[in-house]
Every structure is written in C-alpha cells, then in structure tokens.
Image 1 (cartoon, rainbow, N blue to C red):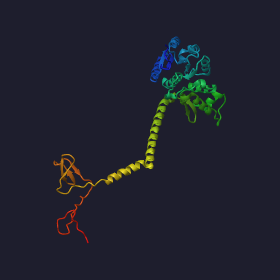
Image 2: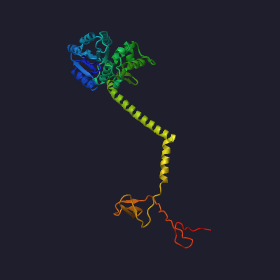
Image 3: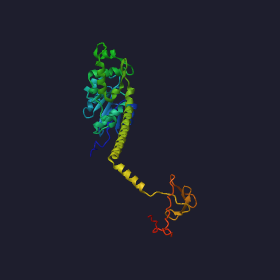
Image 4: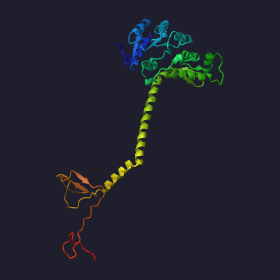
Length: 340
C-alpha cells in the first residue's frame, strides 16, 4: 500500500556541487520538519528523483551543474517543480530565460542557506498541503513573477553586490538614457521589485543621496526581525487580555454585584460583638483545655509563650452596678429603684 503523502515529511532534492551548502540545507530544513535528499551531480539527482516518495521540490544549481541543471529541468518537467539557483555572475536575462524555457518553475539568487531555507520550507509546506506560518505560509513567485525590466535591475544589483549603484548608472543600464532630476521611474521600479521578491526584497538597500545596492546581510537578518515582531505581537496580546480583564472587573463593580457583596461582608463584621480584655483578676478560657490569664494589653497562656494582644486602645466594657432596692434591701434584678 503506498505511503500517504500527507503523513510523510515534505522532501526537497538539492542538486549542488557544493557539499557544505548541501549539508547546511539538510540541517536547516530538518529543523523545520522537512527531509533533504542531496545530489552532487545530474546522475545522482536522477536517482534521488526516482525514489519513492518522490521529492516535492527540487533545487538545482546552474553554476556547479552547468547545462545539466537545464537538462534536469526538462526531465523533471511538471512532475517535480524545479527551482534554478543563479549566482551573481550568471544572473542575466539570457540565463533566466533559458531556465524558465527549460521548464523551471522559478529561479532564485544563490544566497546563503540561512536566507533561502525559510522560503524553501514554506514552498515545501504549500506543495505538501500544509502551511508554514514562520515564513508567511507561501513562497514569493520570485524571478518568474518579475518583468524583464525588473529582472535586469536585479541582475545589475547582484553583479554589483555590496557597492552602491548610483541612480544615473542604473537608469542608463535599464532605459539606455541619462537620468534626469525629478524622475520617479527608477524608484517605482525598485518598489515593484521588492514586492515581487517577497522576503528577499529586504536585500535591496536604499543608499541616501546615491541610489541602491544589494546587501545580502539584510536578508539574513529578516528572520530575527520576524521573531522580534512575533514577540511584540504576543506581548501586545497579553496586555490586551489584561486590559479586558480589568474592564470586566470594573463592569462588575459598576454593576453592583461585587460592591454589594463587600458591603454585606462589612455589615456582618460590624454586627459582631466587640472584643474587650477581661477585667482584672477574672479567669478566662479559650476553646479547649488550655487556660489563659490576663497579660499586659491582652491574654496569654500560663507559660507566657503565647500572647494575644488587643488591637488599639479598646477600653474594657464598664461593669454594670446593680441598683439598691428602695427599701434598703439587697439589690437584685427585681428590686429596681423606682422614681416617683
């Protein structure tokens, strides 16, 4: 019985002659729940593609495989979506067009594995029928979704990576004419290019007063910025929850439920008989068999180790004096003095 595709981990085939990059992709994607099959040449890539379950996605490098990369695109066809890597020197309109014509589903710049791994994981998850929230749930269309002018601009920036490209230079490379002050065509094109590249668009850096340059370090920093934004969002959600709880308590107080309960508790406490110290020489006993005796400001056990002091300066209740009988007899409850 064939294995259920949705239950198996998504699988990526990496055909690249650089062993270090292959191992980096293997480790990074394994941490995201994906499986990586590595091939150092076209023959090994064909063997890996023939195993079952078949790869969900293939990443082939044009720089190390050369024409074999285009041959793999033609052989895999529509069965395995194939992305072609192009380094800065090979990122030209001719090579991009040749890769797309050979059947490549897309092209991507040869960036550090740390920058490409989140995008590949998201693409794998989408092809595998799942979603990867850590990378936005989908991979940007990248080069296949760009216009020819946008691809030319990206190629110029990549070939001059790390150096600021002045506006007049970029304008001549793209439009064949000199740049004139007030033109916003280049700026609008950069905005579209960034949007088309998706997360990788962060690599296009604006250099104030000069123009633009490609800075791959900004792409590598993007996952950390995403994590910081996620932490901030969770903190704001916690604060919002606390504000809702406080609002609910205030609503209860205004509604009178909690307030009425507190007022009733206060009435019960006020109705309790006052606690006063016993009179001098009186004997008292706590519940149980432990006798107590008067102490300074309170009562204590016979050993004096446990002392209970009266709070405040509550005076002892005055003793009631019986009234003498009208006839001079002994006072009593029934012999009260009657006034005429």
